[in-house]
Length: 187
Image 1 (cartoon, rainbow, N blue to C red):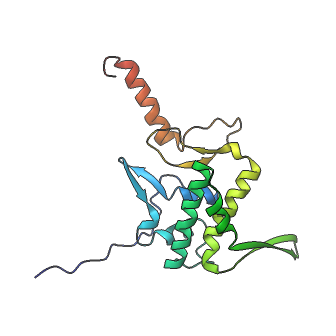
Image 2: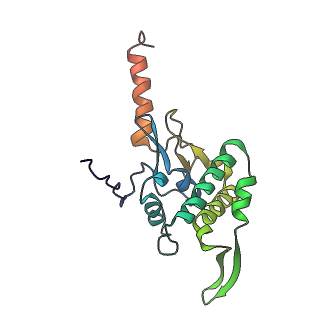
Image 3: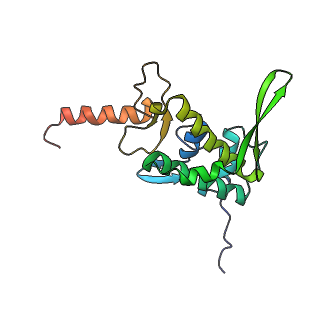
């Protein structure tokens, strides 16, 4: 008798090696490499909920299939904009929401509004990219390690950060250079 197929256990913790980047880059970092294989947080059961939670969006937005579709589309649009300068898809995401100016007891404010709330997380990530572009576009970086696909916003004082993480990719690169210098015949 065949065993019944078990459902994969949904994630409850964020497995990504780099978190806490601005929302647009954090969304792109739902793709990362492990042992030479691309990992995709959004393809794992519970992955969208983990990403929403790690960005404080889980109270405002549901982790349903429509939201997942919109977030995946936004992620692809961000990648196209960053890698190829193709902005049409990202502009289409941005057309799904707007910022409404408001006055609060604390002063002026802004409230994002969406055509459909399920566009909210993707739209906020697209808006985050616009904010990065208006702040310091030259500080949006891809990790310098050739086997890494992670992105980060360089907040170092002199703007020379090269690695997603010195502990991971930076040390691997240093170890490779040391090995090459120590073993010149093994090139």
